[in-house]
Length: 301
Image 1: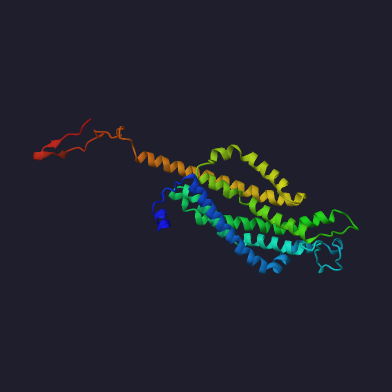
Image 2 (image 1 turned 135 degrees about the vertical axis):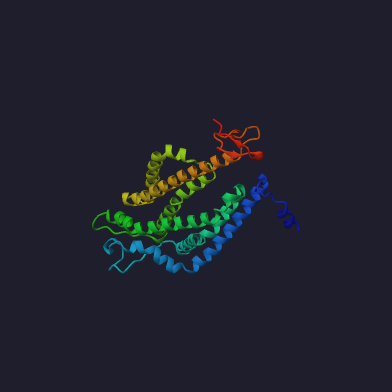
């Protein structure tokens, strides 16, 4: 009964006290943790196929640069500590669980934000979850494609007669960090679009800082990528610039549409103390119209 009363007395505009916001945040975080934990169970079960996928970029390096490999088909990673095997499996399971269940916990985060939005802005929930998921997976796919080339540049640059003895802990940490950074960086245009939709970041501000934004994208790509090769940096920066320009274009179109709608609404709703622009006398009356009693009216000058 108490929960029903709380729901019944809930503010339809989404206004809550600070304590209510904290309780709602705690509840959403608990749900997110449960969702990721359930995904981690799936990741634990599918660990071996996932490990093969993560190993593939390393296996594309020429075998003469990989320690212990006698042919291109041999591809093994090493670990030293007795707990390293269990630790890396646990780590991969949780990361895979977070990625697999991303649409569900992203919905929980969006549901925490929506009470503070207008009703016409809450309808973007499905679009936000779908777009954020697609962008995140697209970023990870690009990272996976470029990872093989980046690893080859890093390993082969050591020169002839050198071999890489990568342990599974450092390698998996490197690969997963690359995937997560690429995926998260592709969320930048969605963040810009969201801020524009809630009137925080208008097109006028984006236009003034457009060149600076492109420069900062390249700086971010140079700093954020775990590898130091220019190939990986450019592979991240160019798609991010394209997505950034697409977000700026969206902001331009959205602000122009919003301005037109505002002008139309202001024209329809005049204040009470403003007289309507109506001419009480027409410019010209029709000639030879019959008046009362059959008399004819002449045309006014």
